[in-house]
Structure formats: structure tokens, C-alpha cells
Amino acid sequence: MTVLIMTDLEGISGVDRIEQMNTDTEGYAYACRRLAADINACTAGCLDAGAKTVYVVDGHGGGHNLDAALLHPSATLLTERGAWEDVLASGECAAYLEVGCHAMPGTMNAFLDHCQSSARWYNYLVNGRRAGEIAQGAMIAGAYDVPFVMVSGDDAACLEARAFLGCIETASVKVGLGRNRARCIPLDEAASRIRTAACNGVLRRSEIRPFKPTLPMELRLELYRSDMCDELCAAIPTLERVDARSVRKVVPEIRRYRDVLFS
Image (tube, rainbow, N blue to C red; front, side, top):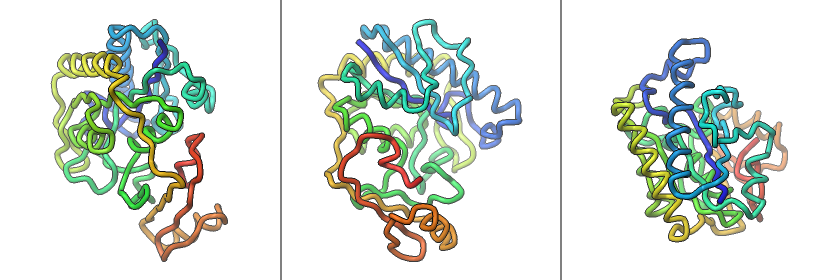
């Protein structure tokens, strides 16, 4: 059985300050070590549930946050562009999991809530519903009938995942204290929660329906300022300008990650 683990950094255990997202700090280096630890806990849970092949994607920024030498020996890090989408499309992937998630923009008491760009993207809507990166991952997995079975992150991310995806397994490793600070649970407890949620999610994969938005799908993006919207429309002339700060596009079919983005 093959499973795929997508990762982000904001929702990792032990990460409790916005400063840890600055790549030239010791806090960031610590966050990267914690990223590997959370992935390893998730990998162990997948193996407990019978997985034989565990693929991992470094999904934060442009990647380059993971030291492959720190990963569980049964985990395979995918580094080639688009390789994770190929795994989903192969028909061999039994379950999709996300480690280190954050909530969508505008969520109360959510640690580092955003969608793609915290500096430019104000709201991201799927068929009129506000959404975030968790929904994006779910749409790509669902396009290939792969169930999204588990999320780890802060409380707000876990609540968001259940709101979109139903009774999937979640592992909360922290609580947001406003946007830029969080209160983390002990690291050993976080690892236990992640491993248990991953195991249960993979075991329950047949119960969890893949997430499939109604197609054709309308995506709408609200930016912070009108000049940002000007720039985006100049870069992507096919977008429809809705108003000073908003654009939309209609997606007839979802096949790659770029289909759910504005880039």
C-alpha cells in the first residue's frame, strides 16, 4: 500500500513564533528539525496501518526545508517537480495525509493563518466558499479519488479540515494565541497524537470519501490592494477581473496543483 504525506511548516510541533519562519534564524533551523520529527511520527503511523511505501513532499515555500538524512528510513522524499501529483495520478496511492497545516486567512486565533501569500492573498474562495491550502490539497487528491485521511497542525487547522472533509483524523499540536504566537503541547505528546491519527486515518481510508467540489468550479481570489490585482491580471491575462481587488477563473477539470492556484 502506498501513501503520500504533504507537509507545511507553520503547523509543526514546537513551532510557536512567527520569527521561526525566517530562514536565517536558529528558530527556523529548529522548526526544520521538528518538521522531520513530525513526518517521522506520521510515517510510523502509516506503517502501523500497513503502508509499504510512504512518499513525503516538502510543501513549505519552495521546499528545501528538510534534511533527508533525518527522515524515517521507510520514507521517500519526492524532490522532482510534479512527482507528488504523479503519485496521486498513478492509481496506486491509497491515502493522502498532511502534516504541519495552518488555517485559511481570516481565522480567529489561528497560528499564521494564510493561503499561499500572507502579503497579497486576502481571501480565496471555492464555489463561493472561503477556503485555504487544506482545501487545495483535498481537491487535488480528490481529483484522483484518493481520500484525504489525516491532518496535523494547530486547533484551527484541525477544525477547518473537519469542516471541509468530515470525520477525518486530526492531530492538534498547538493552540494559536492570536496570529503570531502559539502554545504548543509537549513534543512527545505531539508525536503520539500524529502517529495515532495517521494510523487511524489510513486504517479508515475506505470510510472517508474523496473531496470533490462541483465542476466546473469557480475560483475567486481577493487581494489586499487594487494594484496587486492590476499586476496579477497583467501577468495572467486570462483571468476575469471582478472588481478592484478580485479576480476569478472557472476550472472545468482538476488535474494538477496549478489548476487550483492563481499563478
